[in-house]
Image 1 (cartoon, rainbow, N blue to C red):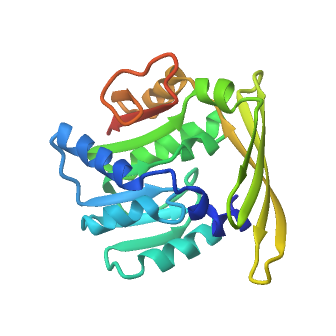
Image 2 (image 1 turned 30 degrees about the vertical axis):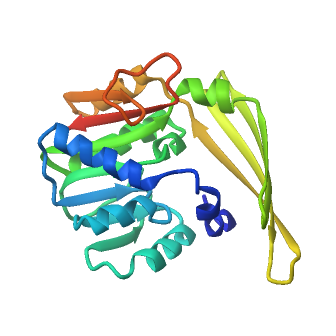
Length: 244
């Protein structure tokens, strides 16, 4: 779970263009000639994508398992009257409402390590969608987690943050373990250290499709990254669209 990391998350994600992500979601709606009004966002984090969706005047319900991330999201989004934030786990969330669309961005689905939990998530999503509703999500591909992040170490030195990111890929269980150590400069110009461990499950496209079908999604599309092209062997991000 994101804890101290939540408070520097936005500083480290400056290379992610959430406006482009939002525009891709809009292009999906346009491609399918779909005009949703009510959207549920799973694992909304600090609300970076949420901001653009809220600004586009969708009625949003957003959940995240991390109170720290939600606290930052609240400060970012409290000017909007069309956003509701809830502290829930995407594996077993319950909201007394059905939605036109459900979205999960930035490889949040990879954080579900157990295949049974992922199936439960998909079934739960299906229950919370209106008939014909759309489920949009993306994953870090198996290729990316194994071969690019894999058994590698990354180091970054920024003005107020220094961190190391050591990774281990367990091929037998398709699990990528991330060990992060941060040194963050405080107001007294001293560096505070904290450590976090994150785990992502590497799923193959066929596994995701199988679980979606098992969850009674009959119409499924998958694309390479932010495109409408078929995934390639070396695609790093794969987007799925499942129709209820």
